[in-house]
Image 1: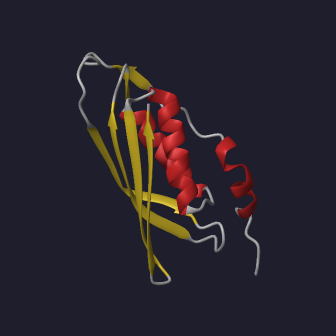
Image 2: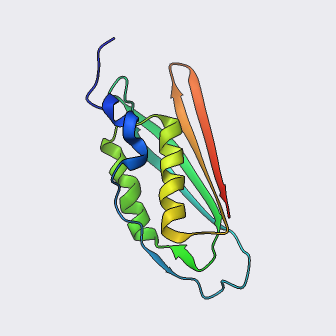
Image 3: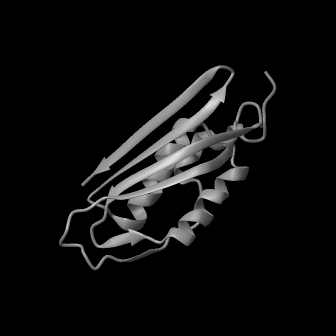
Length: 129
């Protein structure tokens, strides 16, 4: 099968340099509550075909001392538009980067990828303190 220029990225995906995700100080860190974020137009590139993949990414988290700043997170998600990455890697990399940025009580990332070749992929990853 023909190799794409994106395939080599899968070997070191944990070290992929992504844009910074800014945070702001949570004034209600004594309360346990849930923040729900949805990115209904997420795109990345299939590392095997070089074609675009489309998904809805859903994030739920219970903040501790910091909350995710949305403008920087939007720029973070746009970064993936030109990255060849497997669905499983996308979800786990987003989880890794969000946990590093805001150190939540818990955080869940779900990627619901549009069908490709008759297969719809849903990937879920979770972090708990």
